[in-house]
Amino acid sequence: MEPLIAMRKVAKSYQTPAGGFPALQEIDLEIGRGELVAVRGKSGSGKSTLLYLIGGIDRPSRGEIVVAGSKIHDAGEDALARWRGRNVGIVFQFFQLLPTLTVAENVMLPMDFCDLRPPKERRSRALELLDRVGIAEQADKLPSMLSGGQQQRAAIARALANDPSVVLADEPTGNLDSVTARAVLDLFHQITGFGTTVVMATHEHDLSAIVDRTVELADGRIVSKVVA
Image (cartoon, rainbow, N blue to C red; front, side, top):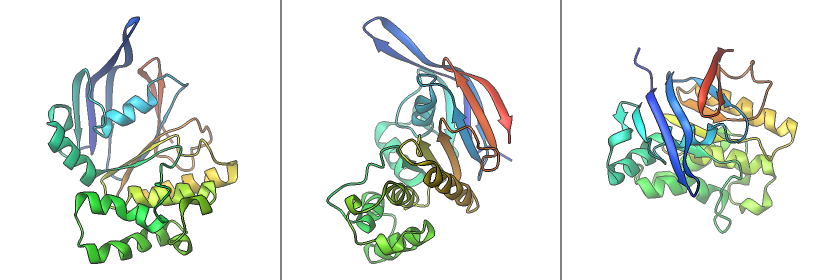
């Protein structure tokens, strides 16, 4: 079966005042549909850069990246933006919910941007997703009225709004207590049951019961790929 995500000989360098900085080097990685993969490593190891390349947020300096059948490494900016809106959901460590919109309106926002669903169906879709993540009763509240765990659940619902093939989560439990963090990780595990692939950059260690694989990065290189 074709992998949903395929990275071949991918490298990414950034220019700094001191010269080029190699954030990623010679990355070869395949991830299947419905997999939950944790990307681990110390700060600066390249975890976030790896996620941003998979999501088409950043471009590789060299190499090939194919996600959901699209060669995103050489797509034009407009095409890439359209592709990203339809195929990728992103969950950030600091939630990034718009404070002046209700929780339901935040979840509807990706639907409004991509116009993939008739306007009259968008609120019901948002409520369905909020119910799936266990906070439907918070739909009409502002994000500031929710706990950190509830805000992260809302962010996950928003990431699922357009039925993406891939959900990318960048340190999604970094600001949560251990009990809430475990609940959020369990939720990511449940999401894969719907066929969604989840790639998560994390410092969490005890993940064997949740993830399918752990990819360890060090100095921009993959140093291990461990099946849970």
